[in-house]
Image (cartoon, rainbow over all chains, first blue to last red; front, side):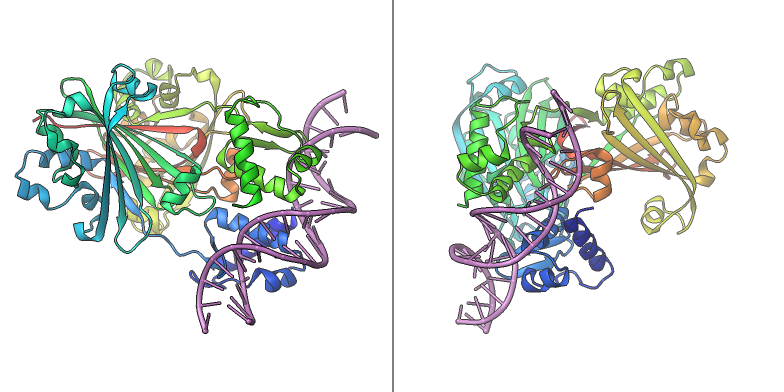
Length: 263
Length: 263
DNA sequence: GAGTGGTCTAGACCACTGT
DNA sequence: CAGTGGTCTAGACCACTCC
């Protein structure tokens, strides 16, 4: 076993033994750890890199290496879809109370900061055309949403939602980003166009973040992102919305409930 | 921008430009890349480490650095649960045809290699006691399953399933690992005890793998694991099975379909 | 045994954080 | 400014793969 692995194992064990508590600073790379383990800086750093990738240690330039604190989880359930559908036909006042994200997180609207950017000149690429079952180059509305906690700097969620322009242009309010956040969400927006959702398909994968994603979500090295691709089908059999959501893997938990028919 | 980042960007761009195809070997670290970029070995290796973490490059000791080929995805849907329930009351012959994993992957039984290890002396820890709503220390049956492709070395799936011992001891066959793989799966096993499932809750998170998980799943550095925690509820309101599934994040896609009630 | 990546060293200098 | 982590060098030797 390599020296750096032995050092990583030792530090990990000492953290688990409680020698250093969450939030504590570890001994300095130079000169403390190098002299304690009688090794060179590179080797100490390689060991700490392992622990950082595992999420055990937080490396902070200029300040030190810290034992990572447990993170605040963001939970997202698929029951939000039925919940949102039930609200889609309620009064605006009722809809204005809370949104689906608040429903999931149990937070008030004021705890969250929300931003929306629209692009109504977007043209369908091959993948979107295939999913929507529309011709390549069909005009789409692209909506980019970012949500973050008021006290934090980085969003915990970046969503890019696509709608077919011709399908929604009947209600010009839907093209106006200043109307966001829309009370009642997308399902109410579609309801104004007499579109009712029948089912929602969600596909989940994980992968290392791209450079842009790391920056936008404020991710440390070694943290992966969860990619959620949501496709909404209407009761008349059309694909009416496609949404790609990027979530930080280390603080997101998704819940899916599957009900089974009775015997 | 650091030198190693510029080198990583350059190599990434050259791969995307098609200068090296998937499967191709990159120039050697020493002396090719160090002289081409006029830098030291450490810096070249740091750049390649970035690309390996992104999944763009495959580092192979003693052979070289290779452009990674697109991976074979393993898809897992939640529709498998209803599918398995429908089969649970069919004849053994019908059940013997395929299992849920084959249903998802579209492969034949013979393409997959399956192993099962049982421990019927397991006692409920705090978390399992809480989930099952049973006293701490209640006797459980722990079943560990590994599934892999016949031509591959590492499993693509490690599942640890828990059942309450007293709930299932009525059918001694369920304690016998040599009966696995059981035709019809867990839902048929429960059916032999007159237990019918009502709903299944699945929670998904992603995190960096532990050391053991990397080894078991044969993961490269930087690849995260998807953790799926499945809780099965019976029609009489009990939690009857808890299952923790570990999946390689870079080759797994999970699909969840949510049906909505009609207006 | 030749070729390749993996580990390690000792030391230099840069970049960031806080006082 | 002092203290800390981040990058980089030049070179040595080890471990793995394949002929």
